[in-house]
Structure formats: C-alpha cells, structure tokens
Length: 369
Image (cartoon, rainbow, N blue to C red):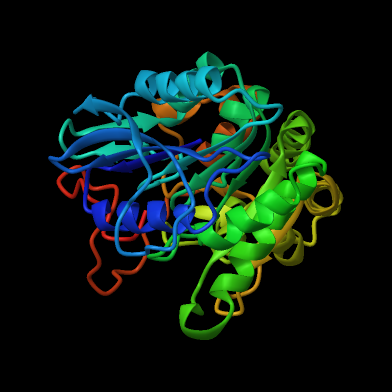
C-alpha cells in the first residue's frame, strides 16, 4: 500500500515512482496498490499492473477521489482501510511517500501544498491505530527513523523501515525493492524488511546513483526496552555534574541534515569517550549493545556517509524541550526531555545559507522528501 502524496514539489517524482512500480506490477502473491495525488490535478487510486512503458502510467485507476486532503491523517487511514478491504492479504506493508521532517515542532510527514496540512508525529500514531496496524511501515521520506517517531507507532507495525538522513531525489528504487519483495513473500517479516534495506543501500552505493543515504529496519517489539535503557542513561546524565561537557559530547555525535538529530548509539559512545564516567559508560554500553544487537535488525549507510549511523536517531535540541516534545509518547516514557532541559543552550556557528525546512515561512522542504 503506497500513499504517494505528490501534491507539492514532488509531483514528478511521484509519477516516476509509480512507473517504477509498474516494472514489477501486482501478481498472484503480491498486490501493489497506490494512491497518487498530484498538485492541482486530483487524486487517484491504482491497482498497479506490470508494463514495460517507463514514460507513462498505464495501470487502471480504480478510484478517482477529486482533491482530498492528503495531509490529513484520517485520509491516510481511510486509504489503508480501503486497500485492506479491496485487496486482502496475509501481510501488509504501508509506504508513506512525501517530504519528511522527523518529529520536530509542528512538522512531520505528508505535506499537502493545496491545503497546507501535514501529518504530525502524534497524528501518525492515530492513523496507524485507526488502520489496525501493518506488518511493515516504510517511510519514503527524509529523517523519519527516529526514536520519537518509532515509539509513537510501536504498537501498530512489526517493523519500521526508514532513514536517519535525508532521502536522495529518487527515493526508494521501487523496481528493485518490489522485485526483491516478490521473491521473499513467504519469508519472515524481518527478512523482508532487511531485503528492502539491502536493495536501497546497494542502489545508492553504486554507479551514477552513488550518494549519501541511510536506511534501517527497526523491530518495534524492542522499543519499550529501548525506552527503559534510554531512561536509565538519561538518569545517569542528569546526575553527571559537567553539563557543558555533555553538550560538547552530544554535539560531536553523528548528525544529519537537521543537526539536532543525532544517532543515538553514537551519542552514547561519544559521551562515554569524553566524560570517562563509569555510570554513563556502563549505561551507554548497554544502550549501544541493545540498539545494534536487538532493536535495529538491518542497517545500511552508503560510503558517502561519515561514520556513526547505527540505525536510529534521537532529538538533541539546542535549547531545552518544548511542550510539543513533552507531549510525545517517548518523552512521557523517559527522562530524555529532562536531559535536554539540563544541557546548556547551544548556538551553532552561522553556516553558509541554506533554506531551513522548519521555518514556517518556508513550507516546502528543498530536499527530495
């Protein structure tokens, strides 16, 4: 089930990706169902059929919906419910395709430029609950593989496949990923998720498509224990007296297009390295081991990435924790927000000009997703 919100500057990519899906098409073992919305051109639903024409969409539109709000979580839920009813299966993967901004502030995923609406992180949890859950939730969008996002939907998907970093312009290589999916339809869900990560990473690690990219698979059943281990680490950090050193260590951790998004395992490693504190080191080692050995079941980072991407990121704000952050399920289950509030305020050096994707006056993220 692929929810392609191209009602923004990604419209051409949406058509391209649907054509990539047609290179594989639905079969006796796997149905590919897509909703494609294009800016000022309406929204249609397709049962994706195989064809060899890469220039146009030839699959039949099984529904024409007019111009619904694809930034409304209820519409996402309605699409998935419709797909489940019309094309029932033993297992389901839902792909949310659009711009992504992680959890932060008033942002999230699935931006509709016609309505100027989007799906926030708590709303994503509401959508997944209404859908009744899926086996794999995949997000073909930037920056969505975060502890805060995953924790919000942990009860409604077995695995989450998403990226710590921004997604390259072409997004998922659907022709390759779906071909691999059709070959492992009878395997365990975790194997299927791992195959998606492998295909994506290989695609962006070779030839003309070589670029910075990450993708990982997270096992949601492991998220409650991640919260416990993160909470224990945060308690040790709150007890550690030199908060300036904690800030410096946090700043040195692997980060992404949004520099407040840090790789969680690398953050714990950098703090242990800089503080040499026995308690933080012990709690950090437990957290790192759990992320690498249990939580993240497949992890890919291309050679263009700097080191430190372990498959799950976390928010390290420049200045405390907002009320929106405190309202997240992850924040309620851990003392991470208290840890953020304990750090001294950080003002980064002025970078070369780049559009800020979280500036409310810059609604359209200049990156692919």
